[in-house]
Length: 211
Image (cartoon, rainbow, N blue to C red):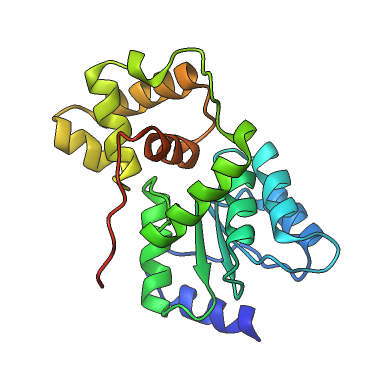
């Protein structure tokens, strides 16, 4: 019933096309590999294979896919495991439909969906599991150029590649190339790890959302 309701909402949104749905984690993996979606809305608790494992499997084969965890669970541990698996965001099932649609657009634009409260909790988890973020990267964060540090700070604040490009008056391609260099230097795998690393190293700060 939840999937049908969600499908009905999303099918009315211009630019969205539902290309598959699944009732188990294994089905989700199979359909994703068959249809190669841009966005995957993934639950946590599912038969056969949980959402975290399904997300990890999908992204190993389709790294360009963007996964949003959509679940009823608020526990920090689930958020942590989902982000470790490569999810771009985490939404609760009781979220407003307009918020979900906006979230999908934002993730498609390259953003991550972590509000200040979630980011702080995940950062605490990463601190507990030190191997998840390198303590001694190939180059310490102090060796980033000023421009690289600025890009990393803007990324950690939640800016998309387009917003970073506009802020720095460069092309999106330049931003993508710089981010690849930053990830390589710091041995980070994705934008979320980079954002959390920037928070841990003190070059970015969390801002509370008052809305």
